[in-house]
Length: 448
Image (cartoon, rainbow, N blue to C red):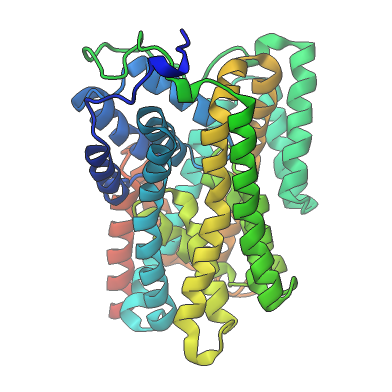
């Protein structure tokens, strides 16, 4: 791309900042359907209808975001907002993609925690749990069909499954081993990593405001001074809250540990939300015991049913941790949960903004270089095995709610099978499957 001198570029006057703000706010409330659905909505609105950005530039930005840890749809919104209106545009676009979901999930989490044992609510979640199990199996298939392109990727996926299923190896170590495997394999046979699974035939939707031949704006050109300034601000925004939490509550307190744990989780979300869920489960359920296994399944259902990135399920984890542990006292359970959800969201998404606002120019110069793409491709393959383990774990808790020594839940099994048929054979949306399963579960529970 051509580069402009600093005085040669002005922010595009054809899209006002106010108009962009209204669009990003609207997107935050209509971004259902996971990353695929959210990216589809952005493509339809920004490329096909509004023509704010061309197809080629849109896909170029998407490929950047697919290389980064974090929710690619939210990062894509941040990227395009940044490209159009500099840093303030990126921050607004990224925040508005998150905030509606955060407020909605805090409200739904409170309803779940307060009234989860009420027959109506219990019936709804009785049907939702098997549907979520089917959804995770379907996610395993979707990611696997795109990423397991040769026998080596299958081997990495199988190895990852064995490591986490049989030996309970921590997810971060699996990621590191997969990245190393990808790098070594790229030296052995670079052709294994040359295909771009995200490539697509580009269509011409007419002249766009940010078109194929639009020069790179000044703020998108890499400068060390700009990167250093951003990193200093990011370090302050990370250090200050965690320091305040440590001073106020101590390092071992649940709130402080949430901040530290989800900082690590934010750096491991290669492959989308389902990739990091096993790590979140290992920590939040098994190690810290912020919530129960069945609550984690219910939280995933809420995350699937609300707008925003699926990784926003972590807000539910933070809420339930604060609520279950009475972190602000038994008389302030809602505030404790809301504070936990806010902490978790802050530390989960902070680095997504840093990666886009500071890293996009750097990534542009390294995009499609095999030494960078090979480890990420191998990580995605490993993620398939890890997600399969998560699906089996969910199935265990749904089908044998009291363990193998208890009774097998045949009704839950039927709902799981029906949900799988709807997803695999009829390609129904996640929202429809969850809605139908919830109604079916309610009918069954109320009729017993």
